Image 1 (cartoon, rainbow, N blue to C red):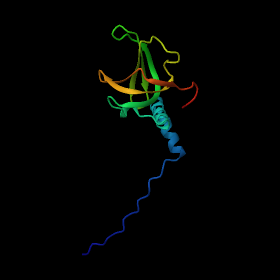
Image 2 (tube, one colour):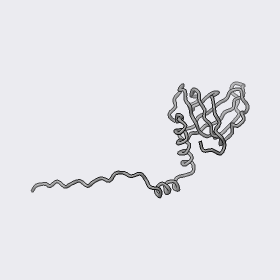
Image 3 (spheres, rainbow, N blue to C red):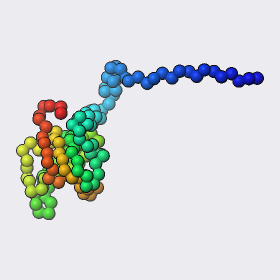
Image 4 (cartoon, rainbow, N blue to C red):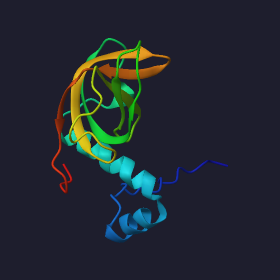
Length: 139
C-alpha cells in the first residue's frame, strides 16, 4: 500500500480583533487593568522609560499617576514622598527638605526624571526634575 500525501489545510492568517471583540475585552477587564494599560500607553507616547524596565543608578524619564503622597522625615529632615505608578510598576519619588509642593497630590499625573536608586528593594528618585501634567487632560 502506498501512502498518499494529502494537501495540508491552509492556515488562516491571524486577523486583528474587530470592534465587537475589543468591546467585549474592555467590558470583561477590570478598571485597574484598563487604567494600567492607559498609563502604559501614555508613557510610551511621551517617550518615557517604563518603571519596570529601569535599573539601579540608571538615569530615567518616567511618567505616571501619583498614588500616595506622605510627609516622612528622613534623618531628622522633612521629606515629601510620593508613589508614582505607570501601569507596569511603582516608584517612590522623594523631595528632601520639603514639607509640601503645590500640585503634588494623589491622582495627579506627572513626568519625573533623575537617577534611580534602590532603597529597601524599591526604586526611588531623589529630588527629581518634574513636570506636572495639566488637570483634566489624558496626556
